[in-house]
Image (cartoon, rainbow, N blue to C red):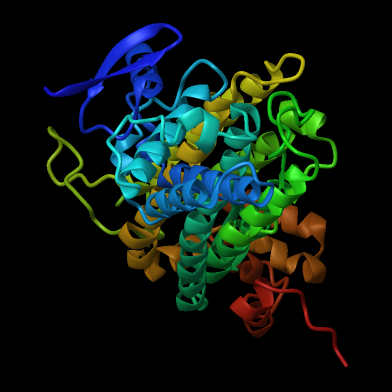
Amino acid sequence: MNTRSEYDLLGNLDVPADAYYGIQTLRAAQNFSITGVPISHFPELIKALAMVKAAAARANQDFGLLDDTKADAIVYACQDLINGQYHDQFIVDVIQGGAGTSTNMNANEVIANIALTKLGHSLGDYQHLHPNDDVNRSQSTNDAYPTAACLGIQFAADNFVPSLASLKAALEEKGKEFAHVLKMGRTQLQDAVPMTLGQEFDAFAVNLGEDIDRIKEACALLCEVNLGGTAIGTGINTPEGYSAKAVEKLATISTKPLVPASNLVEATSDMGAFVFFSGILKRLAIKLSKMSNDLRLLSSGPRTGFGEIKLPEMQPGSSIMPGKVNPVIPEAMNQTAYQVMASDLAVTLAAEAGQLQLNAMEPMIIYNLLNSLKMLKQACEMLEHKCIRGIQANQEACLAHVENSIGIITALVPRIGYANSSRIARRALLSGLTVKSLILEEALLTEDELNELLKPENMIAPTRAKS
């Protein structure tokens, strides 16, 4: 393999001759082999890093700290990254020591080398444009990296929310399709009162829709960034006014309403916005998992369970039991949700581990948030297209459960009283007879009265007041 020699404070190291990364990236790649997931797995983070570097270059240009040639070359290189080029050059594992320095230097070196080729120079010829002196000018990992994280998480959320909204819409469509299907509602896995299958799916839709708004609120907290704070938030090595100008330019490039943090020292060590965002993802994961549990219960059987809905058959379910088909899609959603919940704990612990003016565990936080968003997006799309849209109602089973249920006695309480209703319910349970037959046997209501009270429309909504 052809190589070029590069030098840092630890000495010389041979770098692949055609690599756009440099010596510090290569050292990090050799040191950190933890997840097997490189930075390139999260294009939103690379895009955000490039935007931060482009904004910094333009701010430095305005302050006379970079000449036009260098600033333009850096910005052009950043645009290539924003457009999706050279992402394979981001080879460092997302989990790393050094509070993200390796990620920052991976970006600095790749951008420097792209810019060098645009200026007609060789890869690694840093005397003409340097990763630290030029690309990283007026920055530290400690402000560039978390700022890019805030931006990258928002980009990932932008990609995820449409998938969640589409899943919500699919549930709403099922709600309309099943609006006429009467079934029993259950509390504590016991018969409760009648409802429609449509109401059940409408509730799923509303439940998920709430978190679309919560995600947007969490993204708003990520719009306050510490760019310009450099090492610990004091702004060392930046000209006066640099933070405001750099963030303004980043807001323009990213089209996000970014603002400088009111206190850059506080913002450099605080992980509160990340913790809040992680909590929202955990909340959503819990909801998705609970819904998946319900889908598995409602489809249980096919002959000895609830059997009220039929899920699309995706694959044979057993290597030993012929004919068995399992609810594999909701099961996969459950497991995705558990991983997101576990990731929230990792974020919580990493945020708590901050010390003094910096949190060295930011890579763990950023990895888990981006990974959770990626997993949730893919899982929601899977659930919608491989499960929800193909669900069928078993109307006969739903109706049979209602007719055989003791729970319908609740609809009769206002007419025959709680004591009579309790007695009839107990008789029905012990005898196996239906509530309806026992009511008629004891002449507590006429058949017409009973039929009127047990009409679906009278059992699934508040009673209309008599005029």
